[in-house]
Image (tube, rainbow, N blue to C red; front, side):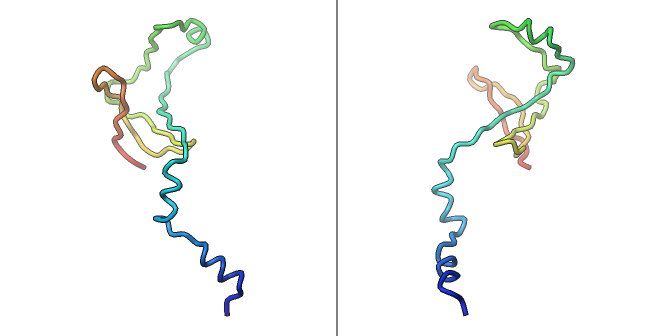
Length: 92
């Protein structure tokens, strides 16, 4: 037979569907990461406004998408209406 405390605990359990409306507005940090091979401190110190850094990545190369320090997808960079965009290609 369940105790009163156990009965209250069962009543407060939410299904995932009930929790989502509250969770949908929580902030998170999304990052798209890529390495720049052979980048040195000299390269870092020479960066100025309008500097370009050659990533040595070919167009369409996949880059990891990270949300709150967890990799969640692979993506590739794209240009849409003159703006740099990230196109998700695979969810992990």
